[in-house]
Length: 247
Image (cartoon, rainbow, N blue to C red):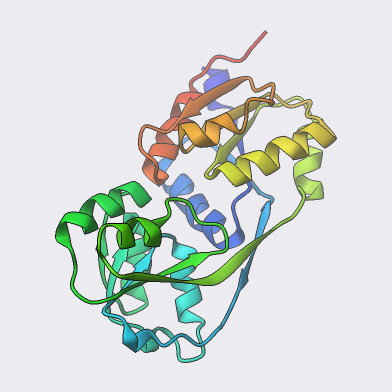
């Protein structure tokens, strides 16, 4: 019983905005004590370029960061069409908060494409995305005969683990690390290769592709989320919390 009630330490490596939102979900979900350490491995850099949004009939958001980038455009989100197709409920919620008529279209890019291809929306679509984007959304939709353009509206700059995170890893208490993208998983694995870790690492991976980037880690346990979203990651962390400690 005592072991179950011990504070679980979670290391969040997401960019600041996403990390804070996920931390709020964690604090609402878990009744047992948790401690959250923030060490973003990616720093978001918004590109506030003017976009002739009115030439399009709908916008595609595959991340909450893209919604924030839209808010920061010179003319704001008002310069864009009102209809928005979004990946994930949280992205759709953020888009609605920014004034869009948002529809959640699956929890990943594949789900978005599965919805849009048979729907065949009329008019031209605009995918607002980061410099690195998975799923080839515009390419896939154009191949299906749905005219789609894309604009890069933010970049994510790699940065090292901060001193608080490194200090945490020097100790021997378990550390729970949710990893949300192949890139962040790769960056985290590289940081551990450089600095090492005395702490047993319990990894929650958003998908098999994310898990694949952690193969070089000597992790104490690995759980892949049942669904590629925040709820799936909380479920994976719950399973890790229940994992008996090693010898």
